[in-house]
Length: 221
Image (cartoon, rainbow, N blue to C red):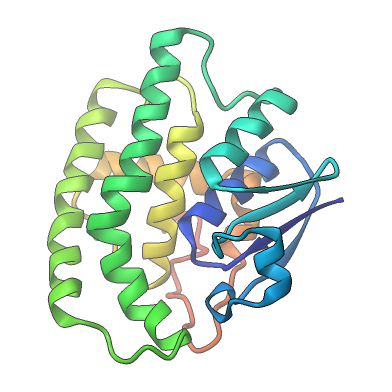
């Protein structure tokens, strides 16, 4: 069985978890307090980051590389389209969420509200929280624009781009930081994706000291 070293609200870990679950790859989850720099964990990934996946006799790090490996080694069901242009668009959007969205939103809301307390790094920076709350509106509007032109974020089929976006938004939804009234299209998209069997483990997450809101696991909001 595969083993994933993760933290529950990490969007990068959630993206890998969703890929594994969608491909029906059984995986043991091991919660890793990576910030404590445990020597055993650093031997698995000298970068000291999660996720780290142990699979097929290999130890892998970096969520993008892990997801690419899973797609190539376990191609069904596919999370990447066939055409070159379509695959580019998926990778572009995965990069958008894991880079720009993460920098402007996730790091300023989830990390400030949750990670700082868990890691005992003090209180949230109110400036960062305000900036994140402002920036997410722009990103939700961009997602709404995409969904006005497509069935899913990158095209007519669900792809890794949808899982990357859902990984970030689900972590934010856990702390009630997503205004689902801003776009009916985005809300409907998220309702579809969180109704998938692959999402069950994500919706069952519990972070000590941070109970999720009642709607978090409600498939009908």
